[in-house]
Length: 172
Ligand code: NI
Image (cartoon, rainbow, N blue to C red; front, side, top):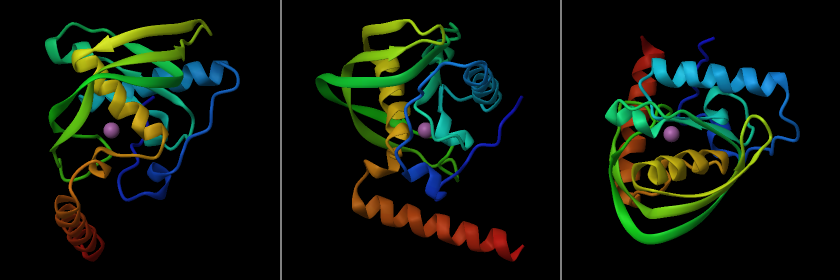
């Protein structure tokens, strides 16, 4: 089932999500719907708060970029940032309107602890594009968007564009 994607400046995107206590059928169904929604929107990752569920679960498929599907689900992910600081070029987000993109500083690799949908422990290091997608999606679980990482000037300019857009939408 396709889910509606919550967009900035919705307050839900700015709160810290709750841990998933038990991996129920409902959680598995949520993950399946999140994949369907992500692929339909041509995204490479989606976090539960983006579909209105403030839970610590994310789906991603960093292989989509190279047409090599690699779907992953991470429940209650915990990241340790490793490696060098790198520029993630022209990052975007399904929850950030007007197709806005900006360069963001990220870590080149991360150590991830999480659970999969079968409740198995995951402990692995990710690097490259996967590491960047994971950092972006995990940020959502802490109420952060990539626009929280850009300069204050860029953010102010973007916020004024969004405000104008919302005003014109409401007038129409
Ligand atoms: Ni996003």
